[in-house]
Image (tube, rainbow, N blue to C red; front, side, top):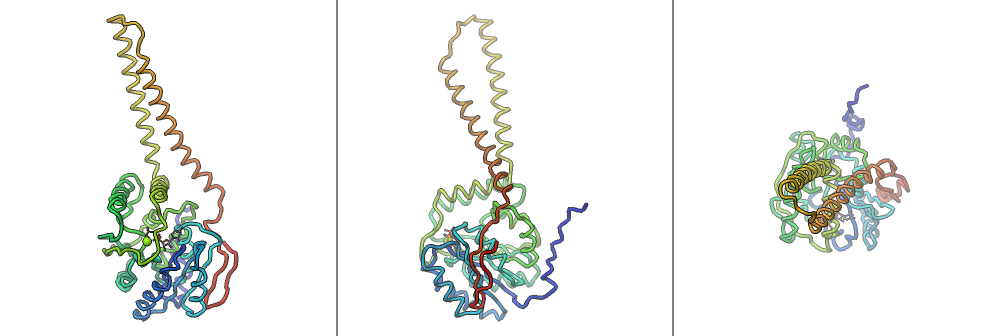
Amino acid sequence: MSALVEIMSPELDKGDMTELSVVIPLYNEQEVITVMYERLTAVLTGLRVTYELVLVDDGSGDGTPAVMRRLANDDSAVTAVFLSRNFGKEAALTAGLAHAVGAAVVIMDADLQDPPELIPKMMQAWNEGADVVCMRRSSRAGETWFKRRSAHHFYRVLNAVSDVEIPPDTGDFRLLSRKAIYALQQLNERNRYMKGLFAWIGLPTTVIEYDRMPRVAGTTKWNYASLFNLAFQGITSFSTAPLRLVVAGGLLTAFLGIIFALWIVAKTLVFGDPVQGYPSLIAMITFLGGAQLLSIGLLGEYIGKTYYETKQRPVYLVHEVLKRGRVVDQMTA
Ligand code: UDP
Ligand code: MG
């Protein structure tokens, strides 16, 4: 049986009228949503292509859904997708991609950190044959030194251990062709580390450099704990290197243990030392106990992932979809 997955989507031949979709996940973004909408619309109307905006409400608790409803009613280019609760940015993006119909799809954040003015450039690269156009941040204004440094190192570590090459300093801001989206939809894992999935599909990729802007308003939805969690998810979803590291650590410890045992035997034979070494015993036990717990925990992390994958729950639930001002879909996955 052939394991080859055909990545030409059937929709490709039908020739959908919409050329460009812009997918934006929103979580409590009431301060920026109208500014973003206006700036984006200005850019898109200037492009002279048929376009749609797919706004995904990721279970916001503020006025975001109300503003989205208003936009979807007033502008037929706006599709508003409401998730049933907060599923996280990766899930919101997946939902947005599933609802986008354009031949090319741009993904961007709601806070204008990814300048919409770059979309024409991205479209140009797409017209020149790229299936994926990655935007690489050459600078990150408005982010702390620590965040910039940790992001920098994280990408280096991730690349060193993961099976696919994940371009450093590229965020989720990118353009995907219909073919790339179709390819992405073949990856139906629950645990969606988007940057890794984007890299996994391969396809002709163009990288464009840009300067990352500070947020125009509102606050970041990430704290260091959630960033650490994302980083950990990224590594454990795309690599089993940590497990191999533990194996290496185990081998090394066992080897040192044997050397130490031999040394004790030799010392006793030569000098006939009485038994001593309570402190070294305790040090050894705590060290080994710690190392064992760490490896079991790590193993558990991978088993936990398998557990979640086997449940086969949907990545997100859509509560309602508004398209051209009308409700087109309710409570589907
Ligand atoms: N976001 C989301 N769900 C979440 C958290 C964030 O959809 O649970 C969206 C958020 O509205 C924004 C984008 O993801 O459009 C990036 O979030 P943010 O600007 O807070 O992240 P940062 O730029 O600080 O990394
Ligand atoms: Mg942001």
